[in-house]
Length: 256
Image (cartoon, rainbow, N blue to C red):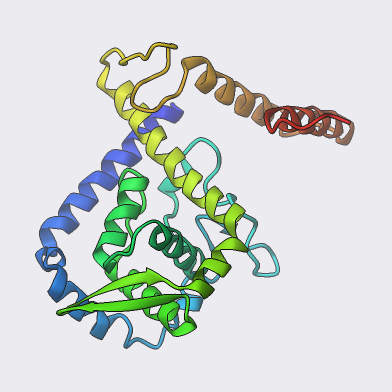
């Protein structure tokens, strides 16, 4: 049932995306797109710093104080939370853009395509979000601009690299999350097709790199935790200790 819900949502999103694609042909003309969003995106009163206030996909829904619930709260480990929201905070988007610029100087539309490719189409930010974010990074001195005719190629500046150095772990988690979603979507597509999986030399699925036993173990853990939603405080402490030991072992740390 859970997998069928994920597939249904995936198909619905794909259809919406296709309809939007046919309804906005101007978005494929990169020069015109840039000029359009320079005028209609950056001219708005909404500052890019505040675009994601109130909770987002990476940080999770806001708590009772209106603050984010911590990285990952909005998605969950199984990939189905994406049916509820794809909203990404302005800070997270800016950090991801800097991470991409560190790899390659890029035009805005190239950065949009890179995020879409990384997430297998799950998260493709609109030009109206990306270009104001790039302008803001330029204003901060985190990025520099090389004018190429009507286009701008953005480069990572040293202050931007310093900002990345202070947020490496956060950026790695965000990119890993997008890659996880991409693999989840590939896994579900294959399950939906009914065709046998292409298997690598160690039994891994060639599309995702995942072993069936790895996927089964993740699902079993989630089911075990769901089954103990009403656990007593004593049982919760026992489970927490088990999970802490497992986490330390997965991370290669010695258990105390």
